[in-house]
Length: 115
Image 1 (spheres, rainbow, N blue to C red):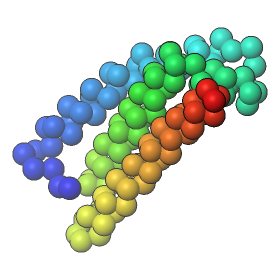
Image 2 (cartoon, rainbow, N blue to C red; image 1 turned 90 degrees about the vertical axis):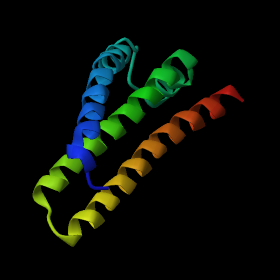
Image 3 (cartoon, helix red, strand yellow; image 1 turned 180 degrees about the horizontal axis):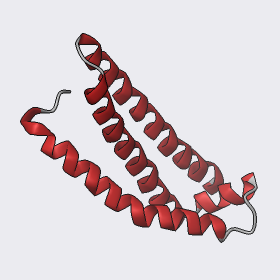
């Protein structure tokens, strides 16, 4: 989990996810603002549409990955010794769970509304 080679790859990955999040975030905000209401049924129906579910899935994955990379930098800067590796592992597991839960929710909504 430590950054071999000076951390250049994670640094670039964080910049790439940040750049990807700009249009995805704008799309997400403007799409929600365009809905007639933010009630559960309206949002569920919006998610169930393929051209909304795909970018929403990309948004969830990019946010989880970008967050993981950022939290990793903070952990490596402020936690030292043997605890650092355990905290990095816990952070990675938490980010994978949150990202997977978000993607699972999208898939479940699509499956429920299509059948």
